[in-house]
Length: 412
Ligand SMILES: N=CN[C@@H](CCC(=O)O)C(=O)O
Ligand SMILES: [Zn+2]
Picture 1 (cartoon, protein in one colour):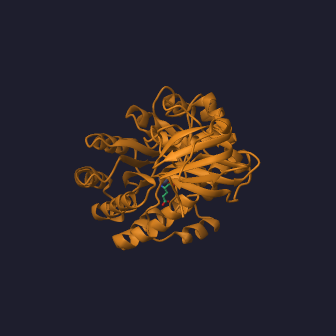
Picture 2 (cartoon, helix red, strand yellow):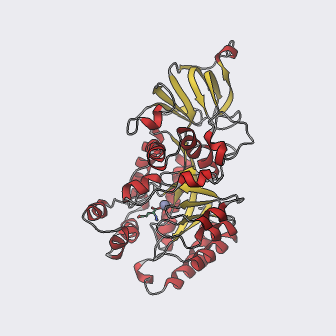
Picture 3 (cartoon, rainbow, N blue to C red):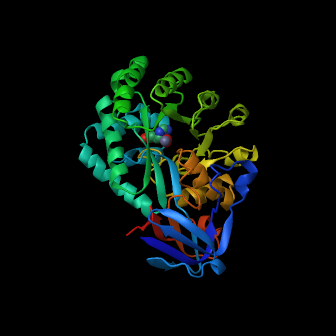
């Protein structure tokens, strides 16, 4: 099966295979081709170029993209898309003046989602989650990282990760799984945090590794959740099973979690709403990707990650959705990109780089996803007719996607 897309007004994010992430000044450039074609064979991008070189190329299906933009699908490197039920009461409580911490303290928050998930069967959890996965695919997401962390018991964490595994097998979208047992302290361990960390290290991790259910390990490194010491114990334990870390850090407080994550070669540090100069210094020269989650800032009314400062310091930046029932009940990466431009002052070029190639890097898949490159997976967004790519983040809240191609197949 082959697809030829012709008359593309502008083909975005055209890269050589050796570009695995872009940093600082490089993020200002979004390489494009105007009046272009692109050829897909099976699930792979085989060829592309300008229309004057398209003569003689044929395919099973031809799509005319006159007036439209073609670009790689979004790579959403931070989600909690597998969850049970919702938390709209937390939302109303916040409107009425309670903080994220107040809500957690009175039994809402992560522990509340864990209770719901523990009481949901694996099949029901799968059905609920699949509905969300289908909807983000339609919104142009072609790769997703999915975390556990709403189980908080061995059985429920494994249930979550098995659901992730089923989604991996059943859908064409690329999935990476992250074990986040250290997301919150379950009620039974309220006075025994070390006991819960022992459970994570001695029971959960070995079982998860044995079933090969996770690609990465995560910790919510935050005051009132897991300390630097706790985080380090879990990162070290993860390494024994070859699980590289991706760490929730600096959401509400900056206290050294970024330097610690960099010391342990974390693939990414995510949230960073609170960021100081030491944090920036720690990231310099490292392989760790800073990841901003602007929809979370929007929904919780907390500060936006200082993306401008991060990029201006010469660092890379990725954007992700953080789709979860508590802080971000949305997986719309188009909104993420718009919000990064509007609230974090990223240029459209920077935001699109952050949500494609750098997002792919933050999930360890930028060798095969995140750009228009010969040999990479054919995961593409075809927009409706738009005047320019600047129009995409500008026209926030409007769905400008006409078609999505994942693994070389048009979504129905
Ligand atoms: N901050 C930690 N975890 C999630 C929120 C979890 C929740 O509130 O349910 C996040 O990334 O925002
Ligand atoms: Zn998160």
